[in-house]
Length: 337
Image 1: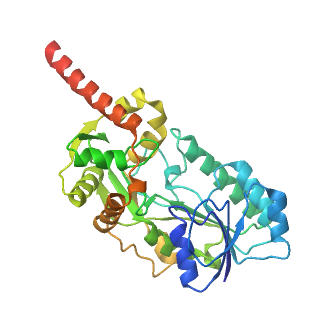
Image 2: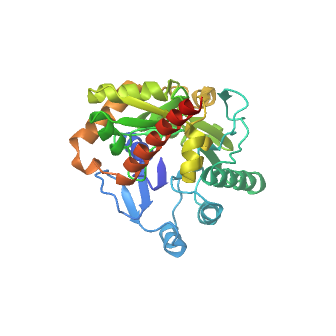
């Protein structure tokens, strides 16, 4: 099978690329070539927004599957419709499970759950992209498949409930130093995490599948641990019991409004996914990397790779200030009572 992957070297896409290669498929990547990789693929080192250059490369080409891992806005979707309408038998758009209804009405999430997220512009943009693609499918037969990942990670991206702009190392370091780590809410929110190698099995299983055309499907693990359990696993991998400081999500968002989307619009919401649809479309799909296994691999990677140990003084300071503010508020309430 001949596939074109736009991106192809990111957190969720690298394992997709590797699995396509393992299957013996003819794989081409379009990206800027900023990330080093040793995968035996053809690579077009272009900015996907350079339409004239991409059109020249597409001359005389046709792909069984085109998948874009770096589309976030309507304008980018419109560009892809122009580029690939007659160049592929299947176009896969990577959306997000954060597009599902917030606040939740029902504990179980299926693909028919309403798409609505008033808290996060990122999710609303993805919803708008989905709606535009569905319209193009209905009106002109553009062969779409929509995939909604939830919290997908690899060894380079440790899933934690809140972090700064430089990743998870600040939190790992605090755990190792015996400092309290910030956890929004009471930490009892169920939160499925999915290893990228498991996500790839479902994703690649959809590629080239005619029954997936016109469909939207999420791909997640069936394992749903709460944040307290996930932090306990991380602590165990570090050999230290973490000191969790539970702070109201409302309080965190009031202090730093940029967290409203990632928290109220995503990680602070209880989520259980019904994965019946992906298992029906890809009968051999099963997520096999447990949270214990995946998180240990991610922790080991960070401990053994100095490049992953990126300090984040801003988030570290924010953590200290928020936790101290809550402690002072509690003391003040006790005084008043």
